Image (tube, rainbow, N blue to C red):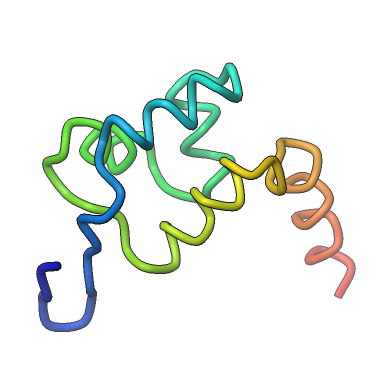
Length: 84
């Protein structure tokens, strides 16, 4: 684990694990980045182990791996947030 000022990065989830989750969901990098709420370059950096995801991102990635986060649930959340 590396700690930088205001963010903690976890190395428990490697780039190959993130890529496996994305491929399991049959999503492009762009689609998967949108699903987990990061920009494309961030996801690409995760997949090549340049940077590691934050704790919050790891939680989202694990939810996606468990099938709890899909394009539909993400879209529903966005729509619900707009009506608040």
